[in-house]
Image (cartoon, rainbow, N blue to C red; front, side, top):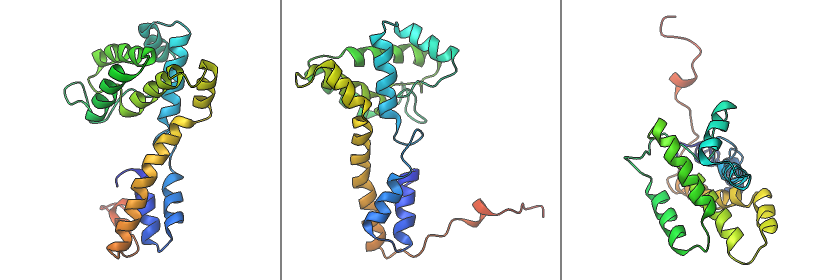
Length: 197
């Protein structure tokens, strides 16, 4: 419930709104800072890979232009505290997918970024993104151009929206079941006066 989407869904439910309004309220906060990383990660890693940039050149290019590498980095998870979701997805893809060129590229990037800081790992959004690029490109159902069009159309962020929608609905139902009153934000977080006044 600490992320913007869940928080908004909860606040909206507690304001007495219906399920759809609460769900939409949560979904409206999805963007570059919350959930919008899948499409961007897929785009960045795929373009770098397809253009022939080495993982090191890609990292250096991003650093030189002061850009974040979407799909890299986590506030809590690190090389010594790995995200189990990433481990499971990565192992499954490496074992079962017909091709893993973008995933392997991202893992090489991760080797470079984690030398700088242990939290600059391939995160779950990045892992899902590169694995889906590999799956769409290599499953036999799409040409590379068709797969790339699907990705450009936002299908990966659609996966995030799908999963989060289930959670937002759960938050809505919890608030209704618990008969929670109108949400009031903590006063000390919104007060304009300091303790010294």
